[in-house]
Length: 56
Image 1 (cartoon, rainbow, N blue to C red):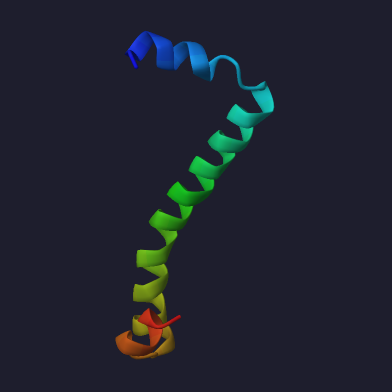
Image 2 (cartoon, rainbow, N blue to C red):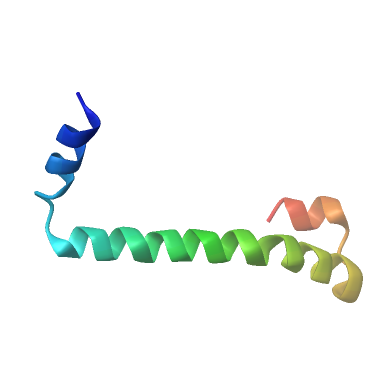
């Protein structure tokens, strides 16, 4: 399947699919930014051990 054919297939999706995909991307990106700093906060300020913070 060529690159052009793949783009043609993507155009068949409804606009709502792209809106949901974009919202999902923003959500996952935001989580990836927050989790490392939350780990440092819980370890440094709250006093929870790294092993407990990492187990969720």
